[in-house]
Amino acid sequence: MHILHVVGARPNFMKAAPVLRALGAYPEVRQTLVHTGQHYDSAMSDVFFQQLEIPQPDFNLGVGSGTHAQQTAAIMQAFEGVLTKREPDMVLVYGDVNSTVAAALVCSKLGVKVAHVEAGLRSRDRSMPEEINRLITDQLSDLLFTPSPDGDENLVREGIDPAKIRRVGNVMIDTLIRLLPRAEQQFPPNVSKPYALVTLHRPSNVDDLDWLRDLLITLTELSTQLSVIFPVHPRTRQRLQTLTRVRAETAASPDPRSLNETKGSGRGANPDAGLTRTAPQLHLLDPLPYLEFLALQTKASLVITDSGGIQEETTFLGVPCLTVRENTERPITITQGTNQLVGRDLKKLRSAAEEILRHTASGEGVPESRNFVPLWDGHAAERIAQIIVRGSAK
Ligand code: UD1
Image (cartoon, rainbow, N blue to C red; front, side, top):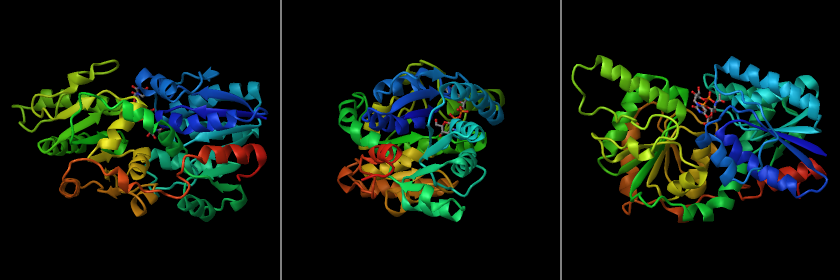
């Protein structure tokens, strides 16, 4: 049996790693790994391959960045050649990025079976590019591996044949469970507690510069109470650079509350170069490797994010999470986890953060209150492998 995996962007790597490993346990399975090159910076890709022990890709399509149409089309064109040459029995696609939908489209046009890992999640917000990717990928998939019951329900509601849906649990949590002991050894020595950990990269938060500036002002205010550690995604870094350029061009006098300049602009910059003059406790860093970021999550007093995966990881770790979005495709992180949506409401963000800090007087997270969502048990990828190879999971 020949299985071909397609990955492209950072969150794909954490999801594919355990599936590659689980399928590797079956001698009858041959695997091919295709990296689309959607993410290409070493800090967004290579370092994840190393830490997650993912083998070198058999193909790197090297598509890079572009508009959605450019990127999706480039992946489709390049992937079609690989698929035709390799003729796998099944293609596995992961998550909801442009690489996911592009590969699923090519497979369905060529009549190659496609399985979607992390199927069925819905934010019901079609202004999110990922929601479009999720809807289309699920419609095209022959086998849909869901992480939680809401995923199954969404798919059935959209007319997907229930026989194609298999609830297996959360592969990202497989990776977390496997690497948590190693991550705990990697806690950055120069970080002192208590601190809040921040990630923001969604277009809805970072492409609107006025909103981004207001968010940064709020983070600066929060940094008077505790350190705020903010590893900055490349998209966000670009927007921050625009923001500081616009400010420099338009501001008659500097705003004392002004955001910190990311002086370490771009690739390979020294993270410490992001420390600021106006808010010495707000640390803007380059993107962090998986283990270091996981280590920081485990000990954070709170996490502020717009990422999907981090809502899940904080739920598993029992760390309070404030999600700066109006909706989530992962409602289980609210009903059974530690996540709260604060929407586009800075007052709510401030008051929710203060409430959390009041409750965690020690200033640390509370790992003993870990929430065990059913099937988020470290074995989701093994179930996927069993279903693919044997037809069903034990
Ligand atoms: C993509 C996914 C998003 C996911 C995120 C995780 C889509 C539609 N979006 O968003 O769902 O949450 O990855 O990180 O697939 N860039 C670099 N170096 C890189 C990659 C990107 O500098 O290695 C810059 C480029 O200027 C690029 C921008 O970041 O234009 C955005 O990259 P892109 O892959 O288009 O989307 P993300 O915002 O990363």
